[in-house]
Image 1 (cartoon, rainbow, N blue to C red):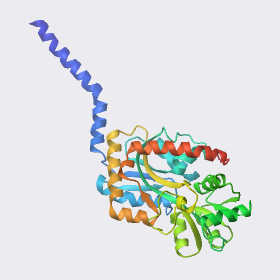
Image 2 (image 1 turned 180 degrees about the vertical axis):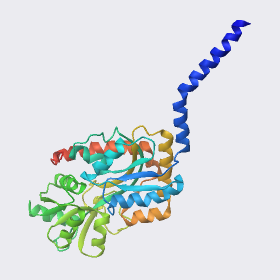
Image 3 (image 1 turned 90 degrees about the horizontal axis):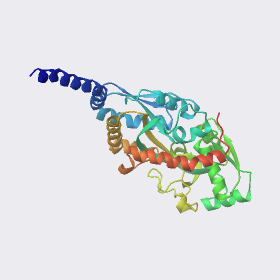
Image 4 (image 1 turned 60 degrees about the horizontal axis):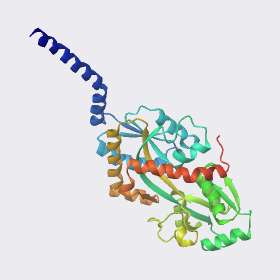
Length: 334
């Protein structure tokens, strides 16, 4: 009888000890289930008013509705988005600090900068958002009316054409390197302090060509200020359906796209990632959001490509494709 009496406190003690050990896990899961209980911050590593900032703000609004909390977009510019991405890498993995990522921040910067974080290991992928193909454009009075004629003109004037880009290591710069390699042409690449000043010089006829995204190119194409030869994607742009794809124009598979995605710091709970992924999916399914992104020349990824796993695989494929090109282009850490 006495022996049985001894067992009860011991059993309840073991039970309490096990309960205490499980507490952090239980409270983490409980907080993940209650998430979010306060405003969520999306860090954009570029200045306000740029393409990245615009896309982030377009998707943040419907995400706010589905998460039931304010979403604050914070701009931390500098070093091609690497400073902002570093803030996200070092933030608490609780779902309250997210990073807006893209080709520069999550592919190219590992080659172009000495980073104190890992572009792959220090982030949890949430979702791809949209992609934006580039356009191959020229000054209005170039003696070519299609891509084949443009290539012929470049080949008869080796090393003479001047091609503007948004800066060393930018996708515009790397696209130009890839274009020369693919087509066997040669020209001078001139870096600017961004895409907008380069485009001003193209419109003025001071430079010959650019590889540039739709937000900067389309207004000038529509105004008749520059010529467009092709879209660097598998399908034509909804915003400019008359411009052929590179496949149709005679330069098969010359695909160059900026892409937008959302990342969280490494170690963010899976339940939180799942809630954020649902919020992004709901946002890009919104008709108003789709229209606003289409106006920017952005194409939304199909639902099957909006998973965290799809973003992880896509990022690795982009690294495999572009790191050798970046290294060949002589892009060096700053």
